[in-house]
Length: 259
Image 1 (cartoon, one colour):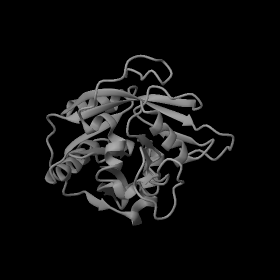
Image 2: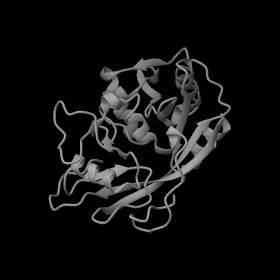
Image 3: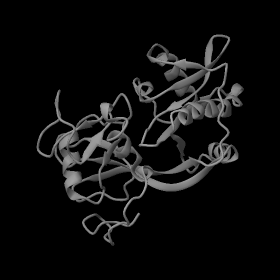
Image 4: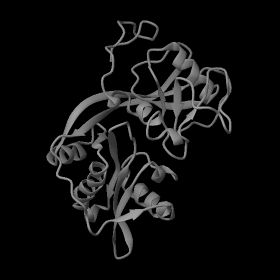
């Protein structure tokens, strides 16, 4: 990403974004997931009953530990984010290549975004819808398979489907980010003895996404060769690669991180 002159690294302003997927977290938080968004106007701390204003937003920590900026090159958006999270707080944000002075980079990585270009979507009759009562089982499966971020309220982001074997949850997949017109397939995980179920659940989740008129997309770590190979083999195409940064906000108060 080309950097704004006001951010570390210099350079020319980036070309205008043309897709909600270019800033998927912000697009979701200001679109279909607005009911989950935490936002604050610059200079006004977030509180019960706040208005949905400002140029920064985040999901509640127990839903999805990410924040977003309307425009990562806008210093005012960074000021709003600092107001939202408070001083000395760690926060994850994407897509960002750099942070303005005062923000400390404490970690980061790269993600690969894939979009559905030839996926065959179809229901899986053996799959059941998972809800809040299933969260303990879902968290246990996530702990065993490590598919990526999943919190106690992540299930509220969309539809999650699972498959049980002898009563035990052995595979699941569901919906995470929802930019307008798109839905992310996420938390794709299976027990080692049931790997073949991943494709079945991806197709089933995609069927529900398409039924409401959205297009599926998903993310993977660039080093996860097995996942990338699977996604490309069933009809997903790489669209872009973007940076995620783990940042500490300016200030002297040290708080427990948001990861």
